[in-house]
Image (cartoon, rainbow, N blue to C red):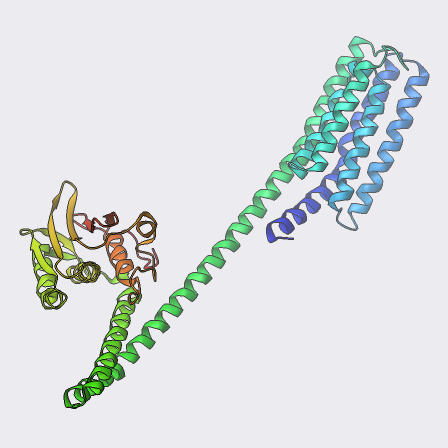
Length: 427
């Protein structure tokens, strides 16, 4: 049984028991009024006695259930059984007071509606509804005056008023209490869910901090390893040894890149240092950093744009643009072109990276930006994820347009006066 089902069952038992404890006090005045009204209206003594016996037995049954409810909570099954017995007893009272024209008829709907509120859409609710329909059909088809003549109009009006009022009180006690109980249970579950989510967030933040610490501690020894490998590569005379050391140097560089991406990803974005800046300078800096790398890959790297003022964290925007440009260069074959462009928008600024690489299909476009999803064998997917976080933290967005064989355009859109979108780096 799920927590929600268990909580609902517990609330049903508590409210059902409370309803059964109060029911004798609610229906007893109606029973006394009905018998007294019939007697005063001159109804046959046999009819008055029959109704008095039925009501006495019903009241005894209700009193017994109330006494049991003071000792233990009623189960859902027992509550359903009690409502069925109640419906059957009221049906007999209707038979004894005019059938389908009985002034007691409104009381038939109280146990049925309470069952709907208690059990919702279930077989128990369906069973009560079917039983009510059968009772109404039987009362409608029964011959008039059997077994007793109809109640006089004046007495019937008073009895109808009291029965309708009593039914309303029963529904108020049963339905409103169940509704309040389920609302309380829902609020408790919502609070519990919030606690679970907060605990999960706290654990995630702890793990991210631990991962960042481990990655940071690895950086220095890894740099020493890289330096030693480079020295050995320079001193090696054997071509085979040089090739092996070149492979080792490349793998160390790849690990360093993964660590760099992870540290950028794990660093809290809530510490953005927003200030007036010129994004033209940011773009030119990225071009200078990557021009040698692009040249070694045989890729032409160019930039297009003029002075572009904005309020943003220039360093974070630079990191995002650098990651996007590195991905574009890696996806572009020798002889291709990667272009960085920046310019104003109607409601902000844009920085775009376009390439003439292999492009992305619809499935890849749908997943790009997800942490650790990448189309490159040596990639991590963190670079694009970081760029998307930077955009969203500034209140902007990162979008991609691409098609297989047609290259890719990554566009970083930022408001000109960037405002925080949220402080949770998990966004």
